[in-house]
Image (cartoon, rainbow, N blue to C red; front, side, top):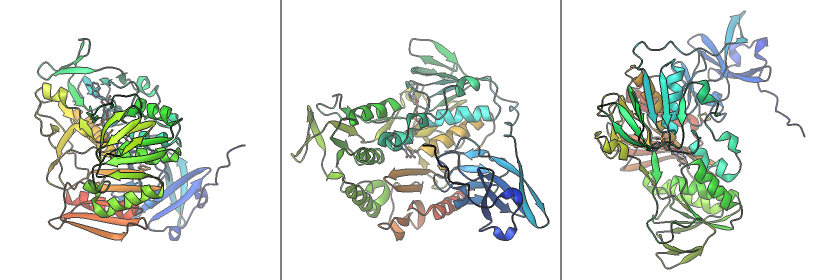
Length: 510
Ligand SMILES: Cc1cc2nc3c(=O)[nH]c(=O)nc-3n(C[C@H](O)[C@H](O)[C@H](O)COP(=O)(O)OP(=O)(O)OC[C@H]3O[C@@H](n4cnc5c(N)ncnc54)[C@H](O)[C@@H]3O)c2cc1C
Ligand code: FES
């Protein structure tokens, strides 16, 4: 049966609309089959694609900040004039159209050709090497070419697959609702087409910051003028008997997710160890495959340490409503074949075990190279390490966060991508501070949780709305200051608070 597509919404914009048709300075209409968002700002009207190029979020429900519109779902940011995706997680532009105003009406004219990247920066280095083919490494490589960098660009990754949409590995892909074609961040031809020398299965074993080269397993060396370290993190493995069996998995790479899916196809019962974001997302995805899921975790409430008791109780109830069975304040002490023994003495038989007990940043290379460390790699506001010309981004980097005033390290997809983008521009000599306020999202069944800021502790939690009704914005305050917020289905408010936090931190409008 042929797919029946819903007709594009709103008026035909080639026929013109009046300013009174706008709500909140925005209007969604169409030209042919393409849905277009009109944004009115300071007397000018802009026309760009109505859907975010990340996961198709409705940009009309986002907010306008400066010359950009921000996506309500995961806070990607698009330039209103060109459609360029100026901030991750979106990496591709949305369409951009010319607008004409005559006789009191606004008409959308022809689509603009995609804008060319600006000319290469004069002081561009000749050779850039990126260690890591994940969020930060990929975003950096993409940004370097987008900004017209024409020199040598080598990306080294010890993974078997190219850069993937890692957050999807515990969500729709694991649940079976997203095909594998959606997982790569770009098709394989993107790399040769953009002269990015992506070398997979390549382990970097050493860095010489004086001689400016990296050593690859096997001994060969590659010189660099600028180096980006983006080695990410690896899952913590359980040091308990039987944890090395083939049905016990951790989840970081596409290969890990594929391996879990292969076992899940015939599994009847799974044990998830750890009530972390990844553990609970995996639990939700395995429930979608109709597998009985038990979660074993030492804390009294899932996610309480990050989200507080109120959200923790909600997350627990949400998973219980979907049939997850919790064994909290307990741990697995050993596996004997398929049988897991818990500290409490209980036993659980399972065909599949997913261990989600946290990750450890991969710091060995940096430590051995003598870079300054601070529970991660210490970087300055420009993401440069203590070695000149060597940058670090993503899960490994601890940077001075202008909003909190603290040096922080986080393990978030969007932060890693944005740091990769900033590091790329700085490797080209732009001297741009990394001032984005941290953002992450997590998805449990049909409930998305968005989080902005960074609160390692708080002295007050304020709940605006009703968490149980999935309509809330939770503020985490320390000394009166809002350190972070978490929200459920308050996307617009969440964007507004994020923009305000950024303003307070002295951030850029985009
Ligand atoms: C299943 C899963 C779901 C997630 N979901 C979310 C989410 O919903 N929201 C969110 O904000 N965050 C999420 N995260 C976290 C997010 O994916 C990470 O914060 C992000 O990937 C960090 O990016 P990175 O570039 O620092 O590291 P990675 O993306 O881990 O990339 C590191 C790269 O370095 C390579 N590498 C490491 N050491 C070497 C070496 N010595 N030589 C060569 N290559 C090396 C690795 O192979 C890899 O390619 C999730 C993580 C996982 C695993
Ligand atoms: S859908 Fe827009 S940022 Fe994800």
